[in-house]
Image (cartoon, rainbow, N blue to C red; front, side):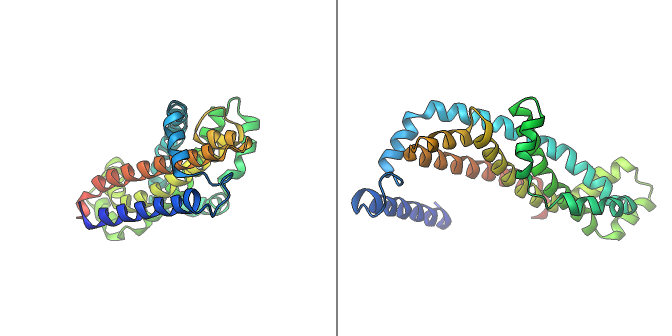
Length: 247
């Protein structure tokens, strides 16, 4: 076990001990709001089928929203970043729409689109799109002008320019934007589920909070944290493979 792993294990054990000490042993916290670790872990096992169903529902929405954002934001960012005139024309729209918090679209999307699934995918797509798109633009702009000019001089085709020159050059920026997009997409997913869903991890937390069942609320929060940690770990490994040439 590496030193980092040992340090993380120590921090985890210390956190559990502090939780146990403040709730079960010394009873420093309100037991109605702050359940003991034994209560929460018992519910994690008891509700495992509900958590599994909720996880499948949440991951399905996240997959479609995030995948659509990647498929649209990256190619658009490469093309618009490459064409300076087009980039300057699009810049005002990017500056206006990019900073708008995507969560404001949730009520509107639920009211307009025919199903909750479509409205959730749309909101996740919007939230994930802008960080990816803007970072892709920045990655193309950061490329050395001489590289692009040299490729043009030797007659590289448009397709080769985009795939073999611009995409690898902008990849570090795309990876950074993708990480931000993934976290934001999960936040929006949870928020949307808390507003209008009948399943999902966000729905689980909201449903039991309405009944003041805080042990289950804490259990749901722990599951959400574990899912986010798993997704980000997988993302870092995947992007580390994509950027292996940098090593």
